[in-house]
Image 1 (cartoon, rainbow, N blue to C red):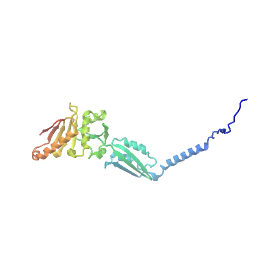
Image 2: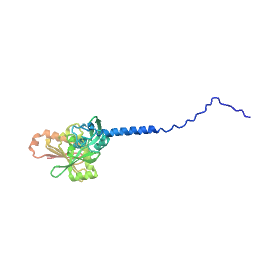
Image 3: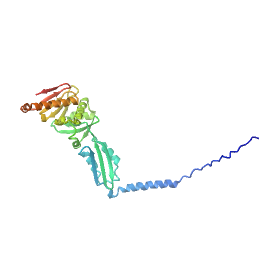
Image 4: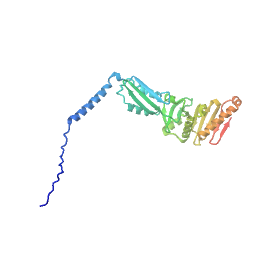
Length: 278
């Protein structure tokens, strides 16, 4: 007979039986969730939480755009617990003038909006034959987005406006920017962000795309120097700054001639020359 050995250290493992499902726990969780939902829902019917105060804080700019004011004003009287902040934030951020929006609720009846406005490259204004504004557009990511005149006001003193014809503006809105306007926008953007102050003399910018050279014609009005500058070719911001300085120097050097001349002094700027046509 074979020898048999017994392992004295071996302890048989007890097979654990599965715990019975506790239905009462699931029912308790469901009841708690329902009570919280009912409680939250019922809060919107308590007048104490109806929105009475709406505060809007705009980064960088001092004027709150009219469209933002209108949207936020519609919240007055709505329950603080009925409004949906994330939905409202997405609605505001869908506006071309808004880069970021953040809403905070404050008990019992106040909300605060922190909004960051878009930093546009420039503003495009469609001008009719009577020199009145027909429509306005903000240039954002090389696309034109229609805005109201009231929504333009925050940018009035910080962003250059380029005037174009109504027909050309309609074309740009439908089909996007062409190369000529792309160069003009980049130049206007550089002018607006220059810290030298050289471009404070410019009161009006017009752009005419009817030209066979691919650039068109950019016209800068400089009334304090009794001058008008026609940019005939695509030029760099440095080239334009040099031209403005030369026109300023000529004006200061011969003030008697400027007084004697009637009408504006005209200058044509090319990529390699500045031509005076008095």
